[in-house]
Image (cartoon, rainbow, N blue to C red; front, side):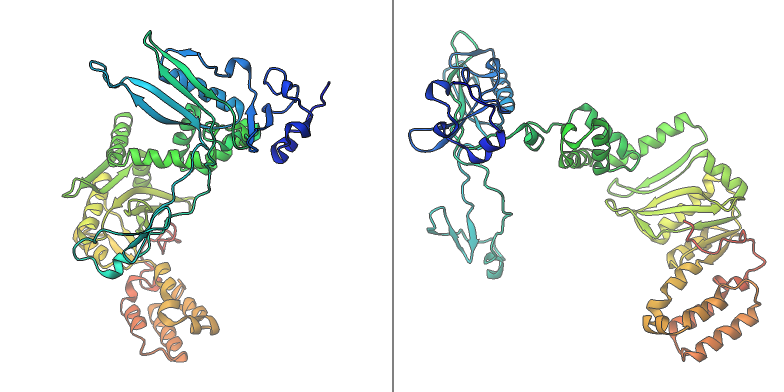
Length: 494
């Protein structure tokens, strides 16, 4: 009797019995079945009334009772290859070791089972000093630690809900130790109590998702260019022609980078400094300096390459130093020294990392910056209104002029004055007209400032009064004779 090719989707979802699919008992063996499915699977109805799925991989991949392997690992790898070709996953189960004298940790029996074998045990939930076991019986919980309140003890331990993956599958292979050496297959059961996955689902299985050396190298190399694991996964998809051809999932890429960061956690700062040392060997004009705290942790660092130092020699009259940026993981403050070249482009003179925004840290940064630039002072330094930074500038620089960033001050205006008056009136437009103007004299600015405050009834506002008292630090009308490059009045270019 000839059989037409059967659609795998019908077999996978509907699970027809032998009588339904037209396969006789004589044709149910793997060698005689002519049903063309991928992977080849024979649906079988057992005498007990439960359904089982029998995989049909290549004969050379199928284990048989009496097969001998030279070691346990070789046998496990053989069973893994059989599982991948058949459409299921495995896990290593019970290991029995010999108890004979003179034999150390000799494995006598090794069980390899389907990953859906057995059943998950129910977790015990604790609430108000009572825990419920598997059968719902109440059991007393041991007394809490000393000083623990009743409210703490009554909290219910909530666990994340997980999918039920174990269905009591009985497929397994048992390896037994031979006196002559090696291991023999003592038991092999190939029937599964669940449908087997298709080749298209292989990328979602644990055995079908493995990072090779190419994946790992791409993740590491791209991380040096600030390219994350998700973008790397998408790039690999383009290289291989589809997500299914990558050989790993997006979560595998993310987990590898997470594990890599965890692995280098104790030596990441040393790697950071070693990178500077390598640059110094290759580039003698490269400058770097750093300090550690009492716990031997990196607390301050500053570096500048030869191009940055050359730019400072040409365009270092006017410098912006901004510390409004912080790193996500290490919580260190990032402070770039920025300027403008003759093409009105932003250029970087040096970069610093500091752990604390205090006077000591800022003094170290400014002194190290001058050291890296050959002790050549700048003409004007623009910063925000940080009090510790203002003190450090006065202690370090002798001739440099210090000015506040106009952008930082005007950004605070809606929060300090009130968003209603700034949005519903013309206050912001009028105050900006007198603040940002370069063509007015100081006396003219003072008259316009007072008129705006009187118009909107803000004469007694404390914050505006403080800004007016330090107007010579941030209003361009008071330092028009100071070289600012024509455009550098804020740290917003950083």
